[in-house]
Length: 196
Image (cartoon, rainbow, N blue to C red; front, side, top):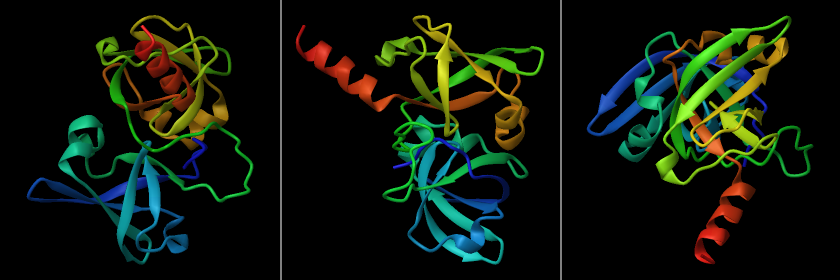
């Protein structure tokens, strides 16, 4: 379980393909606090630490993960939003995030306003995921509030702190991101579907 509050921005330091798997090495200031078998969210994708070497650690993404997320599009030097699993008893500053990406979306527009940014995203609505106005959404692991919710698009407003401390500052129109829709909303949508 995660909260969607990003702890660090890691940098991709190595990528190695082995059969259908991708081994991703990340340099991060939190590496010294990690241990083998620990879960870490990478742009919202929960992956297991398999190796640690000084300030660099490695995780492995399997074909299922590569097919359903943007993790396979990472390149050397890319910035990655990182969050370790939450501790039982900690404050839940974001919202309940599983680290299980539902689908990807594409950034279609960004607008700089006086002191903030508004990012708009388009997603495939045929996959039965929905957003609601003022509901929660996780974009690349970052817990955010939906504004301007439509059938297949939505926007989020980004404050300067979030812009500086996540990889949102690298997004441009055309950037592909990972989405995890609100888990409570997914259960309600499934119940409605089953009762119709």
